[in-house]
Image 1 (cartoon, helix red, strand yellow):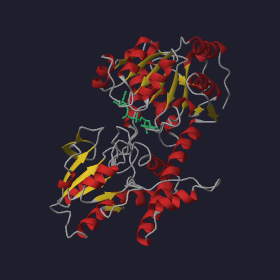
Image 2 (image 1 turned 60 degrees about the vertical axis):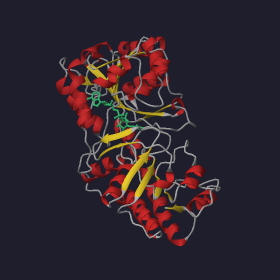
Image 3 (image 1 turned 30 degrees about the vertical axis):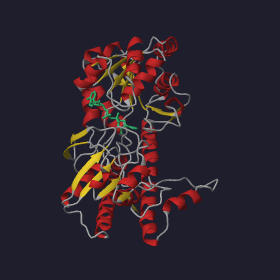
Image 4 (image 1 turned 90 degrees about the vertical axis):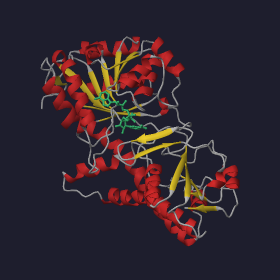
Length: 452
Ligand SMILES: NC(=O)c1ccc[n+]([C@@H]2O[C@H](COP(=O)([O-])OP(=O)(O)OC[C@H]3O[C@@H](n4cnc5c(N)ncnc54)[C@H](O)[C@@H]3O)[C@@H](O)[C@H]2O)c1
C-alpha cells in the first residue's frame, strides 16, 4: 500500500487551531464519559458541541442543569460561558474539526457485543463528514471495531466520496480516524482525570499526531500506539486484568471463609510486599459499564480466530456467581437464627455498583434484590444516590429508597455497597443481623455481623 503524503496545510491548520483554541470539538454521547470530557475541553477554552439522542439530557444541559451526581450545575454554566452547547441536531457536524464518539457498548441478551450505538452514530455523522475532520472513537470495544465497523460506514455513507486517511487520498478528500480508550475510574478522588495518560492509536501517523495534539491540551501525557487495534486491545487488557484478578480474589475469599481466615487481613499483609503484588478486593459481584462487560467483547472476537479465552470465561463464571453466594450467605445467617429468607424482611444497603457513585449499571445489588425476592423475602433498600429505582435492561424493581431508621424492624441488613456516608457502628447497633459483603464493618466487634 502506498504511504500518502498529506498536504501539510490541513494538518498545520488543525494544529494551529488547537494552539489558538479555535478548534471546534464535538462530543457524541453525553453520558458518564462524554459529559466530563466536554467539560475538560471547555475548561481549556475550546468551543464544544455535545450531541446526544436523549432529548431530556440535552434539555437539562440547555437549562444549565446536570444529571450526573459528581458534576455540578455550576460546571455546566461555566462550560456554557465558554461556548458549550448540547444538541440532537446532526446538521451542526460540519462546523466541527474533531468529533469524539463516547456512546455505549453494552452486551446483547446472549452476552455478545452490541455495536448498534456505534453503528447508529456512524450512520448519523457520515452524511455530514467534511474533508480533514478528525473522528475519534472512545467507546470500549474489541480490536478491529474502528477499522471493520466505524470506518466502512463513514466511507460508504458520506456524501463527498471521502476516504479515511490511509487509502491514498489527499487531504482534500480524506478524514482522519483514531481510537483512544477512555480510562476513567468513577469515584476515584486520588487521580485527577488529566493525570490519566491517554492512549491513542490513529489509522496512520497523521491521525495519531492530530489526536495527540488535541488530547495534549487536556491530558498531561499522551501515549501513541501504532494502530487503532492496539489501542482497542490496550483498553481490554486493562479491564480483563482487573476482571481476572477480582475473580481470583473472590475465589480465594470463598476458600478463606470456609477455612476461617480473614481474606482482608491476608490482602493487607500481602500488600506490604514492595514488588510483584497488587491488591484486589473481593465483593458481592462485578458492576459498572466496564469490567463485567468488556472481557466478553474480546471473548466474542477471539472465536473468529478459533481461539478460546479460558481465563476470561473462568473469571466471568466466578464473578457471576458472587451475588448467588451473597444470597445464600443471607439464607445461612437467617437459618442460624431459625429463620429463612421466605417471609423475612431484608434491608439492602447500597444500589450503586460501587461506593460513593450514582451508577447502578450491572450492579450486583439489583441481582441480589431480585434473588431475595424470588426466595420470598420482603426486600427494601437504602441508597443516598438513588431515591427510587424503576426498570432497566435486565431488572424491573419499582422501589423507593427507605430511610435508615427503625433498623430493628428488619430480620437482616445486607451491606452490598459500602458508601462512605453510612454510619456502620450505628447500623450494627440498631440492626438485628448484619450480613456484610464488603468488609464495611471492619473494626466493629459484634456477634450480629456475618462476613460473606
Ligand atoms: N462510565 C465509565 O466509567 C467508563 C469508563 C471507561 C470507558 N467507558 C466506555 O465509554 C463508553 C460510554 O460509556 P458511558 O458510561 O459514558 O455511557 P452512558 O450510557 O453514560 O452515555 C452514553 C450516552 O450516549 C448517548 N447515545 C447513545 N446513542 C447515541 C447516538 N447514536 N448518538 C448520540 N448519543 C448517543 C446516550 O443517550 C448516553 O447519553 C462505553 O463504551 C463505555 O464502555 C465508560
